[in-house]
Amino acid sequence: MKPKNSSIIIALLSFALLISFSCGPKQAYNSPAGYDLNQPEKFNMPDDLTEISGIAFNKGNAATLYSEEDEDGRVYHLKLGDKSAKFTRFKKSGDFEDIAICNGQVVMLQSKGRLYTFPVTATDSDEISNVKKFENLLTEGEYEGIAADEKNNNIYVLCKHCNIDKTSKNTSGFIFKLLPDGSLQNSGRFEINVKHITEQANEEKINFHPSAIALNPRTNEWYVLSSVNKLLVVLNDNFKVKQVFHLNPRYFPQPEGMTFDNQNNLYISNEGDKIEPGNVLKFKYSGK
Image (cartoon, rainbow, N blue to C red; front, side, top):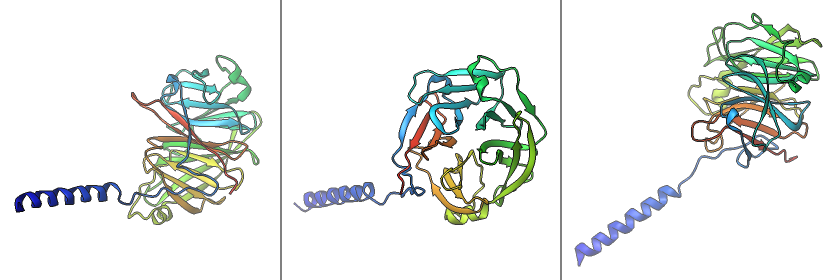
């Protein structure tokens, strides 16, 4: 009888141990004030946008989402939930990483630091001919994030990995004045202190590689997204780190783009793969 009882006891202990592991504490994923990053409304993208990167609205109007993907010089436009997307070609090809729309002008960011501008009204056509190209405004490096401040006609471009930065200490950004004809003029620089991100993320060391930047129109805070680090960083209007949030990989497998609409809702895009489509997640502003 003893061996049998021993087997039963061992089995019961093993089962209890298994339950304790499965029911153990899980990592908490907190959210910025007014949003719940654990309750997204998910919109799968058409096949053309499997590799969706940047996203933007014209004057915050969520009726039409403007976006691009990594392979082609195209601006896509669709209503969230559509099964297909229309596009306008502005360049034959190129590794484009982000898009911003500012007072009637579309600004496209190429990964190597080239910028392209054209009127948003031109996206009604199949192809755009009046495109302005800017090759030498940015320092040498890799770029993925661009954002617009329409109140001040400014465009902000953030390094992902620039030669002038040490990514464990600081990340540089550049400011340009957007003129009515789509021209860009140097207007200053800014810097994000990566050590402050590391401290608030409770990490020993972070090599910060941002993939998107957006201006919260309600608070004037800057939201910076890092796909590699799975982080959302909130900064004040002078780019000082206020809060750092870890992102749940269940919802954010590869977050590449970010924007707000004129109702203060937050949108984050995820690049897809051969199995999963690209998507855009909407986080409704709660007013709290």
